[in-house]
Length: 353
Image 1: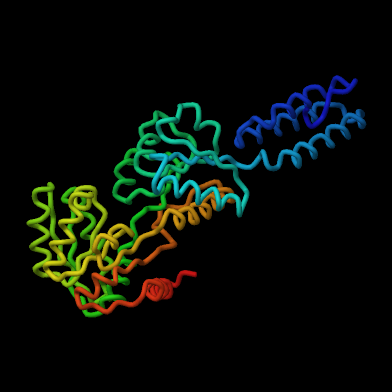
Image 2 (image 1 turned 120 degrees about the horizontal axis):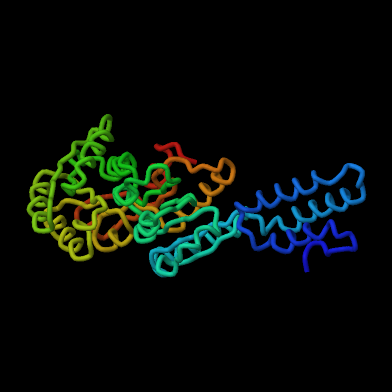
């Protein structure tokens, strides 16, 4: 049953038809529907007061009865249906349930059809695979927010997408935050070693820009292929007091991480990683954001979009976690504060609420 039923006044039949179809229309189309109704009413004569009263009653019923249905629709496009992607989707569902304001649909990239995007007001691309599907599409007019993707991958995948409404919450932490962690947890460290892929030399400049005032020096090793990673690592470890692992699919894949951690441990150089798994595997500590924390910030940005209908600029995670491997720390003769104390100190230094 529609919100109103046709009466003996045939003039109201078109409005009843609008009502019955209203629930199935995407959020962006509802404004056009209401504009059409307004034009229809305006075309009636002023003398027909009874008709106008019925139409106004209809409009109020339409707006209030369909308030939930009119909420903007957000499509969460997953690279895969499990792991961190599924954790993010579930966390965003919980955020939506607590806040309201938008409806949520979840799909994997393999199940996406070209017409799916038109039914939604926003798309959240979860992981590089989902982002790549959208970037390769001929036309994506729907605003896209990238999450769980490193900054370098986001910039590479979306290159040439000028004019599209893209933004991101990068998965990597800002260099300033990583250096603050090193200074807080390892106050005696002075030389920070890093490995940088030759394809991304800009990382060196960005890291150096975060150093002033930190009393830290940068020791860099550049590699071009997997065969050159460990020679470069050895040179870095010879000079570094601490090694900062930067996300890179070549240097930090599953096969490389174990050897990198063993080599660093034998050299008595603590490693700072970028995931919980890194700390469990042997890094002395890790700085990262969980899928739940990224989902919380995603809900914040969706709220901003609902207010302004424009994404803010791409940014780093606001919420973060510190993990400490106390066993590795003791083995290296290091005394490191507990995880909560380190995180609280970083929050205070960054002046984040």
